[in-house]
Length: 84
Image (tube, rainbow, N blue to C red; front, top):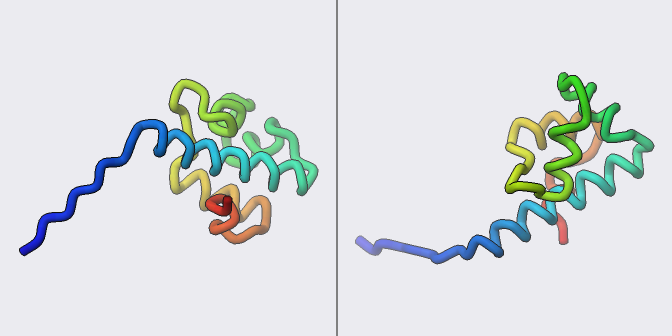
C-alpha cells in the first residue's frame, strides 16, 4: 500500500484562505451588502468575523459552515469562493 504525503507550506494555505476572503468580499459587494449586513445575516452581532476573514487577519478564516451560509445569503454557488 502506498503512503502519500504532500508538503503544503503555510504561505500556500494562507494564499488559499486569502483567495476565499477576496471572493467573499467581491461577491458581497456585488450584492450591495455591507460587512455588517452579512454578519447579521449569519447570526453574528457585528462585522468581526467578516472583516477579519475577508483579509485573513491573524489567521482567521471562513469555515465550511460560514461558506455554505454565505453562498445561500448571496445566492451564489459555493464554488465561486474558490475561483482564482
